[in-house]
Length: 359
Image (cartoon, rainbow, N blue to C red):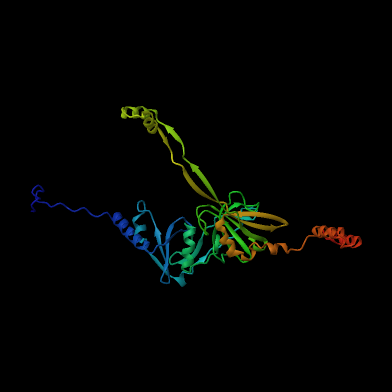
């Protein structure tokens, strides 16, 4: 009999049996934490079941995700890492046709597409998995060589650096509200992406893609300047009557009591001068499309984007002035020469008829 068993009538207390479900839950959580060290991405299958996927050392690894409470013990016991050699997994993208839901001038608006892959899983056959976070899944799958995606939700390739720009005036080519964008050059086009986060989107359920032919850009240039505003404040004068009253009591035997009272009562605020700079610069972009000219304005820091994408379109007044005059302009030039006597009336009428036929 133990020291504390005196009231047990000679019988020792039996230890409680461990709860099998609790043990299964703890073992599953331990396996789940170990798999999380692979920094996986989360996907879901066709039935809505959640999975973690990781890829390293030439293999694809899957781990089923279950709620701790409410999942049967048998299911938790069977939940473990599934490791598949990369060549056997045969990971492939499941591509879908993507058509815009609407167009807004040069922009096509698409629903935010999902990232889906298919792979062979032992005991389950061919599985289709959809990523929960598109903007995280795309870089993960690309970096590990599992799938290739084009930029902007696989809508277009990005063949150059990406720039953040702000449009202050869209010139009827950019819809209202399309201010913060990203832009890059893809072959012969400038691609404008309107979203809130990054080139792979995020945050919005839709993505707007604008395509502007580089040949349509007539020129771009930095306009405006930095204006300095000078503000002068202070210099005010205030009078404290109570201070004047008490100053007289403080100097009862002074020959200049009024002077002390005025000195104590009157106070002035020092004059302050402040110089404030106003950056009024902007990048003007002139675009010629479908017989119309559009003037666009962007923030001054957008200059680097156009320097990189269309450096040949930098404003050149001499080059622009060397263009071929229109037929109407040529008629006006010939009329001036005729008035000066350098061209005869017959020559003028003959040339005028020929130029009018070109209009």
